[in-house]
Every structure is written in structure tokens, then in C-alpha cells.
Length: 333
Image 1: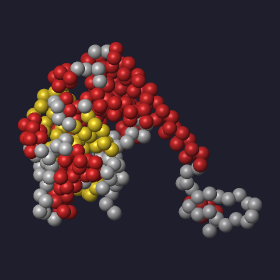
Image 2: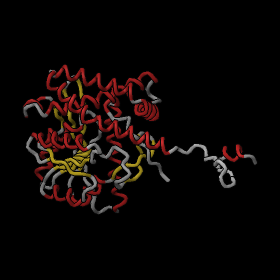
Image 3: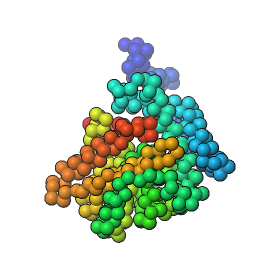
Image 4: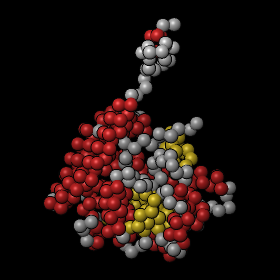
């Protein structure tokens, strides 16, 4: 077999000392990896600058103005981020392609970029708003379930998704006078993470991190506080199981189910939807864990139930979910 044939198979042929070595085809060069890493670091370094520019934009424009800018930023992101754009359209097509035409799929993908940009602009603006102004943006349905959970003294676990402006859900609960904590991931851009924590603190929301001890979260529930968790993403570093999501097995965090079993606190499924410059937050009746059921079966039941409900929320407003996220990245072995 000649050297070319060996090379096509990805095998380096044997050579005598001093002769040129034919490297396996398809392997990335050190220079390529270095360049990609540096570009990623450069892109991340621009995020804080983008936040500061967005702050200036929000401060100088009225509400209608920053909404227009938010949609423009979302449109630009859709154009200049082909990898994320293509992933969003591909996943939308897999999930909803039987129901929608390709043109509608592309439109929904654009909407999800614009919704994410709008949420960012809204969060920046909320830091400048008075309490009554923020509460006035929201129409709430199912608030009685929140009050009933608080009255029972075991706290509650809000389960929502990256839909609409999910940060507003937590802010609304806190501004209504209820102790609110959110379980979040650490942001790899330090300045961006500080901005997000600062925004939550201004609303009265405390930030916990998902790599912290679950005991810390249980203490919040023991103090009759609320937790907010978003289990709609594929996160390899947290415990999860595969349940059906849009007809495909999706690796889904089990944290809310475990906390409900350990504490007796109810799960409150909630969602925020943006409509005509306002927001509608809906809270479902409480979902309780059955402590007498076999543990693994009960965890699967709860995870399946809240994943199915989140899917229903997303189907109603697909343009407001984060389809650019790699939701089906992890696959069953």
C-alpha cells in the first residue's frame, strides 16, 4: 500500500530517520487550535463592552426606543452568528417542522434572537425603574398558588424555562415581598456575571449557583423561601435523566425533583410571555412529590411532568425560547 493510501486511512506510513513524516489527515493543527482559542477569548472580551453600550442605549432612550434597539440587536446577532442561527433553525425544524413551513421556521429563529436581546435590554432598564413601574408591566395569573405555598411554610420551587424574560419572573416575586433565590450557572465572563448578580440584587433576588451544595438550597426552603430553577437545558455537569422533549430523548436536570422529594416543598411551574410591550406571568397549581413512591420512579415522574409542561409553554410561543441552545447535545449511550 502506498503512502497516499495510508494517509487516506489516517495512518502515518513508516519512514526512515530524517525523512519527512506524513501526518494523519483531519487532525487540527496546533496553530488552528490556538487561533480558535484566541478568537473565543477576544469575543468574550467584547461582552462587557456590549453591556456598557446597551446601558447607554437604555439610559438615553425611552421604552419604545430600547425595544426597537433590542429587536435590531437581535436581528444583527441572527445575521453575524451563523453557527447559532443554523442550530436554532435546525432544532426548530426537528421539533416543529411538520407543522410549519421553512419560512415560518426561519422567522421563529429570528424571533428567538430578538426575544433574547429584548430580555437583556429590559433587565438593564429594570435597574432604573421604580418598583411600581416594574410591577405595572406584568399581568399575573395564578398568584393565589404562590400565596398558598407561602402560607404552608415549606417554601416553593419555581420551575420555568428560558422563555420570554425569565429574570422578570423572579423579580416579580421578590418585588411582591417574597424571599426569592435563583439557581444559576456561573458566567465565564466575570464582568457579565457581576452585572447579572447586581441586577438581581437590585430587584431583591439572591443568586445561588448550581455547583453549590444542595443543602444550601434546602436551607432556603426550610426558611420558607422560594427557589427558581430552569431545567430546560442540557447541562452535563449536573445530575439528569433522559425524558422526552419534543418527541426526542433530552438530558434533563433532576434538581427540582430531588429538592421537592427532600423538602416536601411544591413545584410551581411558571412562565413569562412578552406581548405588546407587556408581560404575562402564569403560575400553575402546585405539583407535589410523593415521598412514599419508589425514589427513582418518582424522580422520573416529576421530571417528565415538568418537562412536558415546559414543552407546552414553548409550543404556544416558540419564538420566545432559546432554540440556539444545544438542547439535544447529550445522547443516550
